[in-house]
Length: 592
Image (cartoon, rainbow, N blue to C red; front, side, top):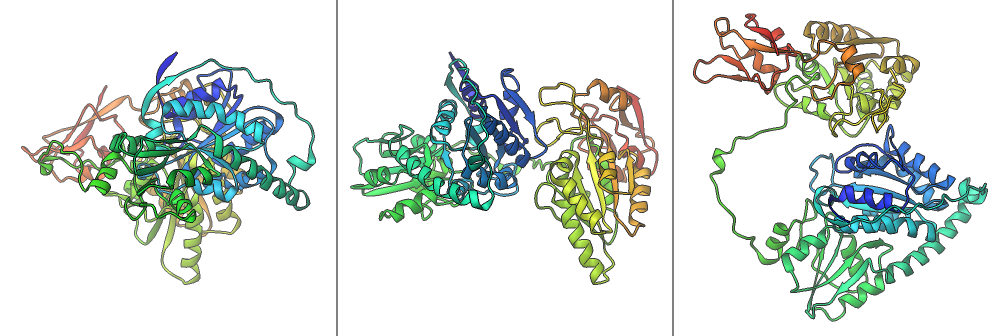
């Protein structure tokens, strides 16, 4: 049976065919669709975890108990999961275990462009890199066999183009693999130093076996076209290179990339006049080839950053790309990212941006856009859950040096459950005067509306225990807490003033559902009036002052003919923020 699948879908299909039993993940582009698609295979238990560390630990537990398991995450998520990763490699598996890292050359939706191939070497972890959807399915299926045979977790490295591009996949049927029996084994599954020292020695023996496997597996192969020019590639770069060079070069295609097959690499490179190494981001393959005594064209020819698409490779090698249709670029209207019309974060940022002598510590999510015009309501951000911690550090500095600055820290509801709770404990335990705001839009917004512990739903949409954020904050020791509707600007102002007047930590929870969220019955009961009206401008009252445009809502614009404000009825959802800003009461409401 053949199907058209993305790389993410194909990974899931391969895991299902391999008899996987347990899947856990935290959403993050470009990995999100992996777990989402797995929920469609009812033989597999699939869950969203609060963060990547927890997802990996849960999958490890399932593996040790005897199930085939997997955890998926984007590249920065593996940083969060690195603690259990490094130790689990020492212990090995019971049921087969695969960790998927979705790297993002080009930083389309990420705060950095790290190359997670380094994790394989650092953790001494077997790694595989498929190049297309068909290989994603086949490699995933093979990975569980290798994992159990060689007693190792497998790191499956994907990249954005592979995750999201589609190809024909030759699908098979599920093979029900009997679960491994769990047997108590202190020497394998515990790691106090006395035991871990012995595990470390066994790990080296395992690496020898993995190296032997790497030299002989068909996943690493030479394509000899009888040329004196060779290209060494792994992952998606193989497809890019084939598009550029066709059969005019020889290829060393690497799919099992840690440990690297040094003997095979040496065999391939010997006798070639030119060796190109095409790899996105860091020169990992290039450095190995140099170590073996060859002088390849790598980062001295290709960029060390961004995606190495066919156009990029062609320009680097041949000095030009194919001709394309030219156009007048001055006629292209810039469309910067913006908060959606009716976004419940808008009211908060509108008021917060007007505060003086306030540093605003931000986080990772849709709300990062609060930094931009017209709000200018975010000064720094770093990684998931860091806003409260960074804000605490900054506030302590201002306090130590008697500076007239306050700190307001902002993060989302899913981010709060991810790592924000620990950061809030930091503020409460160490007596920070920070104002800590949790933007609860009732869903994991930026990655495409995945459930989280605060939504009351599981990954498959079934009912779950809903963790109430205010209750959680009180249990962590927060005393000064207010939950507000962020679309009520006067209430937002009053609440910010209240929090800034305190000499101890405070928590503000802005609670209103994302405008794009599919409302559950519970949502309809809790927010019965949400998004049921639209706003409209009374042209007789409007004076064209443009004050309403400062809301940053994309539904609002200034009519060039009459110089008065207008509201796009197709975008407006009646949040009323612009209505409250208008000094002339020129904005009213209509029913949808």
